[in-house]
Image 1 (cartoon, rainbow, N blue to C red):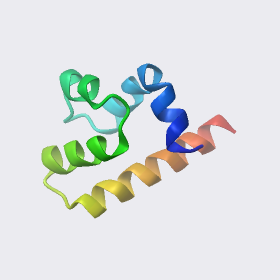
Image 2: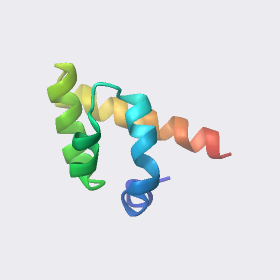
Image 3: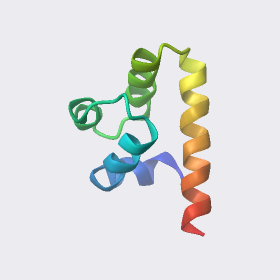
Image 4: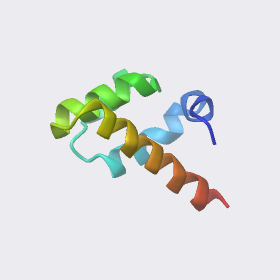
Length: 70
């Protein structure tokens, strides 16, 4: 799965994002519009981690999504 699939189906993925990163609010997730960079920035802000760490978490989350779809 690549990010374009997530972005294209953002409405369906919003709940999964909230499950994974519970500190993000509904408003946070709604305003991201499926943009990966914005998601990473919001994770960085809410969790007080580096942007690189946020990107790593997103990659790991996407790997988990891929496994669950198999």
